[in-house]
Image (tube, rainbow over all chains, first blue to last red; front, side, top):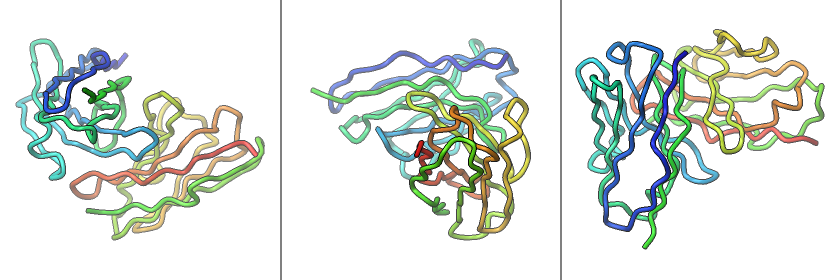
Length: 116
Length: 107
């Protein structure tokens, strides 16, 4: 069974950074892309970027370049997303999702709250 | 970026009714269009891929059609568990984009 287990909720101060994780199981991590997505409360879903589990190759939504950095650790089948220089506009639920042309499997989401 | 416009924004129906939700793309995306259902405080789940292809485990009352710029998600005889938000998403070009969603609510 494919599973994507995301790290817990984060409360961070403005200007700080945070690193989210997405630990996978049930499939060959290096054969698939992982996407990260953002959903603000009651809002639309935005695609942040993709990273290939095999070689760490990335593609980003221009809107999130400089804000998000995607990495992987093949040894633990885990994907990571660093978010930097956080503001209130970064308060949202962040999802990881396995991408195969469509988002077939999703993590449960991580709530990030930016507040002083 | 490709914009996806979903209509209506909200649809009020009675269980047992059959409905259609619309998703219109700002330019042709062939059949690179996928549909998702999201319930409150849950992750989205895919219902239909590539406009009309079924997904294992998804009830047969969900079906999709369309190509180019106009797409439709049909729900045949809505069940109580279907009341949620539905999103379309395109994978024809980068960046990947989603529609703003249609909320299906109980009348």
